[in-house]
Image 1: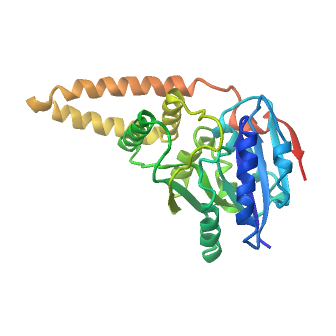
Image 2 (image 1 turned 90 degrees about the vertical axis):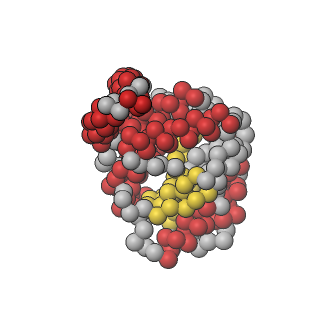
Image 3 (image 1 turned 120 degrees about the vertical axis):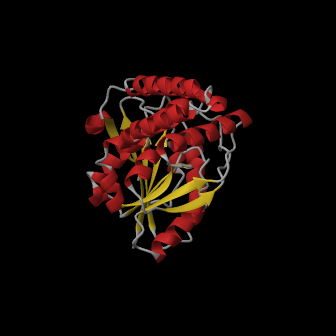
Length: 294
């Protein structure tokens, strides 16, 4: 029987996760698969395991408790590295989701159907057709996508919600750029991905932890994954704008462009040298304990 492992990074969203798992149960009941759950507890202030114990249909629910709060991207990377080192305890299929309910859990059925029909699929991303945040946040998110495409020639319209088979998971677990941004690492390392398009849903409870600064920081971390390509594009655009500067009507654009490049480069340096001192190679040492609920 096929075993699916659901992976959730969690920081205090235990009640939302409990509700989400109960909703996913409806899908589980319609399949012939076994389901396991791996929760990466990103050093939550409050832990409410009672909400998870209400879910009886999953084969087991395993919680990796991290010693320090790293953020969802590093939490996911830690979880992937843990699985890669213990594949014998998991199945060959993995679905990564946010724990707040914003990922449309009904797409799990589509993922299972696609991978059942085509066993050669290694990676599936769930691309976002729309978001539920404020108007300003949505505008800034679109600007982030445009700038990222301008610098990397990559249009990354997905987040954590994705499918990996065991081969892909083992491969990505060895990539250091996974520590920076999960979606960017997937985009960089897997060329032949399948994708599903789905709208983002509203959070089950509470308000989003993603603020403007976190969006900006996440954007810069995505750029760091493609740092070599960005430097090449720096040179390409610099030559282009030097040529443009010879056209009188467009000459004022060139200084603005070089100011943008200077600020962007400074932000790359600042973000690269900020954050946790824990390295990806030492990420498993940040696991404080492991709980198995059933």
